[in-house]
Image 1: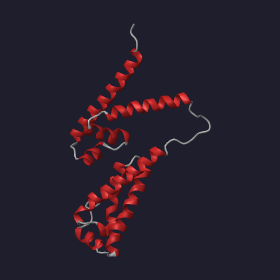
Image 2 (image 1 turned 90 degrees about the vertical axis):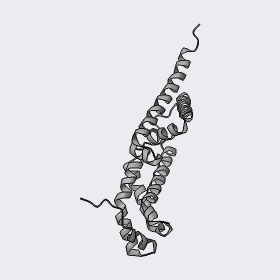
Image 3 (image 1 turned 135 degrees about the horizontal axis):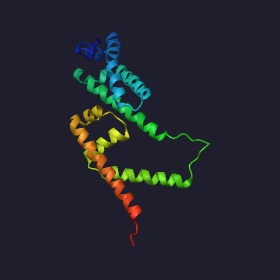
Image 4 (image 1 turned 45 degrees about the horizontal axis):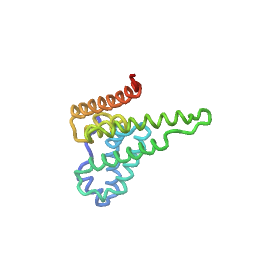
Length: 186
């Protein structure tokens, strides 16, 4: 069975002190944990591999800035989380390739923007705790366990907040659909 422990504090301390062999061993020993973090947080396997590599590069370059050797796991988790978020933002901004075969009509574009605006307004109206869970889970696509861990919640509390948030958004969107369809009952 593979070793699942993070590198020992003595190795971390030696790496913090600039020992090149210790730094290499630290990066190597941290790799499986960093990959696991990345695969649980990033939207795609490719982004996860890239985020893991970026985090290991940061570990290699900046191990001397780590204040406490016991904080290695949380430090690496934050680095991976930030890299996954950065990659998600880039993906959102560069998501739609321009196709010369099927350009959307002006009407389709306006309808998509109106729908996106309705969804965004419904999400914005949620209480903060529900909004954070919904965005991490449904918008950014993180796994439930990662969301619960990132927000300091139990899995049950995260699921409960997610259920309430989804129900509230659904209710808000159905209410605006009913008003639009019902319009004039005369």
